Length: 147
Image (tube, rainbow, N blue to C red; front, side, top):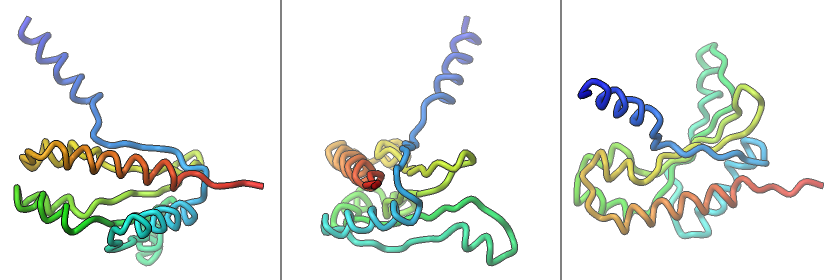
């Protein structure tokens, strides 16, 4: 019986995901531009944009189109890091925008609970704020008007 319980727990953990993936109606570049625009309008700082496919190409390798936008609110991030400095490993926030193997553009980011589970963050209100912001940013960023 104990073995069965452990096996069930193992499979539940495999199916649980701290990663949220959403489809974008836009190209990778349009989605990245939308994210940056939304983030700036919210008064957040954009720290970096990493072009993964260009970096792969620079070393003679191929990769589907993929860019990551790193951004955040230094006041909120600092408060989280004051609770647990190792939260700095997962901050600033980031959204990966990529084209999947079917040619669809997707946006991926970690659920804010990742911070709480891996960094002993006790501020559930802050985690909820992060989740709400990421949800709103990606909803808007993935909408493109087509003629």
